Image (cartoon, rainbow, N blue to C red; front, top):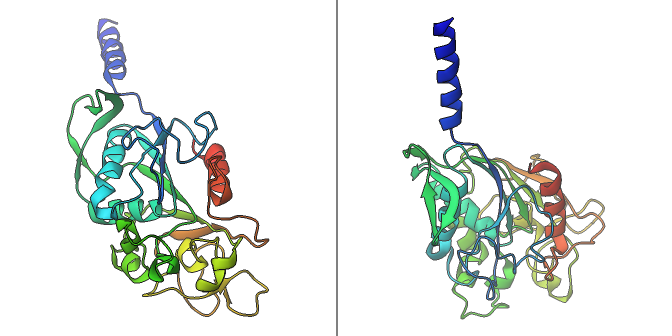
Length: 292
């Protein structure tokens, strides 16, 4: 009886000393984030009201949306280290150039040793996990991408955006596609949400677009450059397919990229409009339902 009691007591102490696992929902902004406080994980200025539901324990990663991906990627890695290591797990949502940021982090650093953190920020620093130690990469369940710019934008190619913005150089289609190995997602699935509510500048982009990125980019299509992809029924270009299947005409998607929503009715544009708007609203609804 005494041995059983001691064994039970030891088990209780082991559970008491174990770290409590927590899930987080990380939101990675895109281009133009001038009013947000970089590194402030509670500042949702880029997205909309902070009171809006957007997945379990939502965190706003906040990089400046101005400088080049490689220069600002440390902010994304800091957030991933803080909330997605040790016993904690993350769901990730990214918008526009945020697609480049999470893709770059996983491809370039997802196979490196990361110090385990506890998800508690004090004095601007995230605390070390109980017991310390390191792990390889991050604990990420999956990634939702709204209006992804992983394949760049023809608006950057043509100088339609301010050339004083260093990020524009990375958003050129050839540069974005060569920035890192888009097929190396460390086995994390990227679920793509596309919009096709184009505008006057749509004539500058191939196929259908959301006013900033074309389907070849938001749909995660591989290749050295952009190609025209459309909704079914459009006679002027090949269809962007749902899921992981090759597109009409034979173009393929990057590894572990899945088109979860295709804007067949041309209802959704690129922009959040300060209220979780456009294609972001679709990714947010999915996070509310599935990021738990």
